[in-house]
Amino acid sequence: MKKTLYINSHCTLQRDQNTLLLEMEDGTKRYLPIEGIRELHIFSEVNLNKRVLEFLSQNQIIVHFYNYYGYYTGSYYPREHFNSGYMLLKQVEHYLDEARRLDIARRIVQGALANLQHVARYYHNRQCDLSAILQSLQELRNAAQTCSSIEALMQLEGKAREAYYTLFDEVLQHPDFTFGKRTRRPPRNRLNALLSFGNSLLYTTALSEIYQTHLDPRIGYLHTTNFRRFTLNLDIAEVFKPLLVDRTILTLIQKRQIRPEHFAEEVAGIYMNEEGRKIFLKAWEERLQSTFEHRRLKRHVSYRTAIRLDLYKLEKHLMGEKPYEPFKPR
Image 1 (tube, one colour):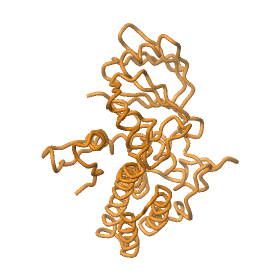
Image 2 (cartoon, rainbow, N blue to C red):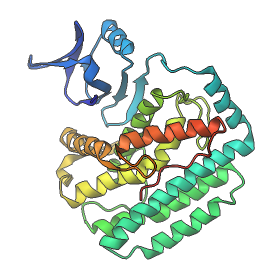
Image 3 (spheres, helix red, strand yellow):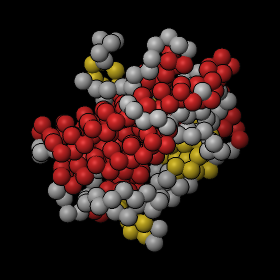
Image 4 (cartoon, rainbow, N blue to C red):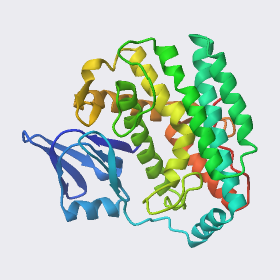
């Protein structure tokens, strides 16, 4: 099985025959067979050359880069090997047709809200009374059916997340991890730092999965296609944020694996330090690899596979074969 490689330490990336070689600053060397690598996430200073990039391109390996604070900065995206002119035309047709674009965007928002409800219900049944949050989410989910524009859908989703985010303080009851309100660039507290970091990881994971399909990541439906490089990954990420990012964060804090000492406060805001990132990345990869029984396939699949399956469902929607129904767990 292919693995995702997260690089957190300064090193040099080289090609050694048919192997990727990581040489650390202390001279330690790590050899990685190229056929065992799915993608690279680089969080530290890394030296590499054109020969390495050509090697990664030949093997269809994406490289995602993050800055000092753990923010996603960009990707090395090899030439698409599943290019499809037909699928590109279908994506554009559905984007330019206002009714068809709105239909897909509404499905994405309703799927996202259903999964917000799923997480709230999980903690409501096990830990504390979240009935007010569940009721608000249901009302907003019902209202999404009558939204007549993308802007209205975006506003509704924003209200839903505002109601949902109160869950963090209710569930955690932790003085070192209080939510307050959502702040992004920069995050103003530890919970917001965790959310920003987790969301960045989900955006890049979704981008990597899109690369394995016939879809073009530049054409999204809920998020406006403009001069940003990618938008479809942002759409798909909305569906999976509650199940992957939020559950990972809540679990890490409740198990006391992530603690205040794993953060640094700077003029630019609050961010996870290197040790904190390593803990989060380990939990993140475990969450992506964790499996559940798929209703339709009648077999166990991972959450990473679930993202890919959602993209296949979107392809079928665009081809007129079957309406897109976003992923919802049992």
